[in-house]
Each structure stands twice: as structure tokens, then as C-alpha cells.
Image (cartoon, rainbow, N blue to C red; front, side, top):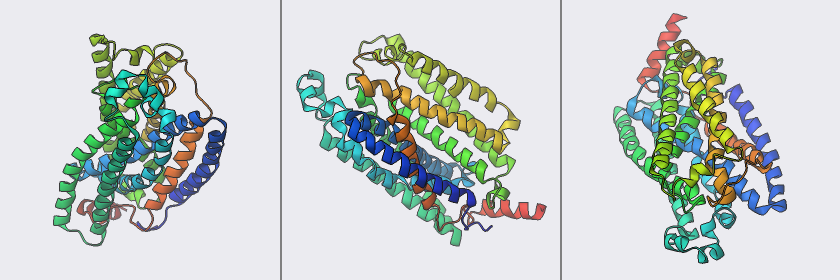
Length: 398
């Protein structure tokens, strides 16, 4: 199998995405008829999970350009393809704008008229500026993704040191822009669900979560591709080990930022901040919190300390699969109580049938877009000197 030929794994993934998208988006559309407010709430939940994988992939692609190393070289095309879905995911954001009054209290004129604080925040929290900011985020992300990936693909035909320098310069600026836009997007799409509550770490939670989701998604996919060329030759134990160390680092960072927010909010004991945790310590949400501590941090952290596990693609993919599932649980814990009560009261844990339907339907759409972005390009950045050296070394060994 050549480096530019279609992968059997990716073809199956494309068919899976098409099937999941067709079936579950149709199921979700039926939910629009039966319960319009719940449809938009579930849609936002499923949408955020998948769009953050695209955002995180864009960040990883730019980070790898700046730092170099096999950890970013081997999965580079996967990161770029996931990032190139962002303009299309921008189109998929339209239902969130159309259903904003069913999701956000600040988008409901009657509720704004009865709330002095919402009136004070209406200069920022209003539907036209909300839509314009979202359009700006996706334009920035799309331009960064397409420019970076197009330059990267040109390197396959002829490696150009000056082009590599331009990619590094773009990545340096792009990471700053990505951090800022993702922070504002987190405030707009997540934190404004409870407009009376605020946290200065909230945006960082989304950014770390996006990177962790994207990295986990990449590791799981690479493990499936490991038996096929060109990844069979390129996915060495050293490259897998690098990805494992990065997964451990992001797992520790996730634990750090979440504990930091909890410590600051709890020790500050400010009435505008503490409801976030008070609303998540009762009614079943406390069980979710314990599961996150155990299976999103403690167990993965302990497992990823093992050097042998981090050098096995299959074992590392098992941990990454757990992390991907727990990222979904973490996102639900983060936004679902505010989707239901907007931070005003405690609500019991409840999973509506449209929640998994939205995750699977939009997940199918994302996978379809992702696999189609990989068409017509080499699955590895063959023009990079490090990749040519790696493939040459493996060929000589055989």
C-alpha cells in the first residue's frame, strides 16, 4: 500500500460515519418535533464534543510545527484533516444560533427584561454579536487550518526550508489566536449558559479538554491504522512512546486546572461562584464527579506511568479510548446542569435520549468530514527529512 492510497480502515470509518450520521441525525430531527427546547440543548452538547476535537487537532498540528519530533510528525495528516473539518462544523453551528432562545436565558427577551444583571450584560450577550463572534472564530480557525495543511502538503512534492519557517511562524501566531478565540468561544457557548456565574479558568478547561480529546482520538485511530502501510513502518515504539508521554502530560494538566478552579472557587466562597459546585454535588452529579476523579485522572495517570504501556499502540489506545469517553462525561458534567437550570437551582442527574443521539449523529457527520479531508493527500508528511530518514531506516532493517 502506498502512502497516498486509500486506507481500508479509513474507508470503513467513512462508511461508519455516513451510517451514524444518517440514522441518528434523522432520529434527532424527530426530537425537534416532539421537544424543541430539548433538541437544541442536546444538539449543543453533542456539537461541542466534536467541534472541540477539531479545535484541539488544530492546536496539536501547530504545536508540532513549533516543537518538531515524531509525536507530531506521524499523526500530522490526521491532525490537519480534523482541523479542516472546522469550516463545515461552522455551518453545523447554525442550529445553535437558530435555537439560542431555547438554550440561553440571555437570548430570551422576556427573561432579560426581568433580570437586571442580564440587562447589564446585554451589550455583549445578545444574539447578533453572538453569531458574529462565532463566525469570526470559525473564519480564524478555518484559515489557520487550510493554510497550514496546504503548505504542509506542498512539502510532499518538494521540501522547502523557507516554507517550513513560514509554517513555524504561522503556528506561533496561530496558537495565540487559537487560545484567545477558544477562550471566548468557551465563554459564549458554555459559561453563558449560567450568565450569573463566572470563572477565569473556564476557558482553559475547554482548551485542555479539546487537546486531550483530539490527542485521544488520534491515538485510537493510529492504533487501528498501525497494521497498514504507511503507518506500519512509521509508527515505531518511540513514536508511540512520545504520544503516550504527551497524553500523560495533558492528563496531569486536566487534573491541575480542574483542581485549581475548585480550590479557588471553594476557598473564595463568593456567592456568585460557589453555585457551580453546589449544583454538582447533589442529585447524582456527585457520582459523576467521583467517576471523573477516578477514571479521568487517577486510573489513567497510574497506567500512563508504565513505560511499556506507553510503547504499545494497542495498550495506549485502550487508555485513550477511556479518556475519550471520560471527556464526553466531563463535558456533560460541565454544561448539562446549566443547560437544564442555567445555574439558578439544583437539578437531578438526567440523560435524555436525544443526548446520545446528538453525540452519535454529529459524530457520524464529523467522521465523514474527517475521512474525506484525507482523500488525495499522503497519509504521512513524506517530504519532511525526518520522515524520509525514518522510512529509510526501517526499510534497511527489513
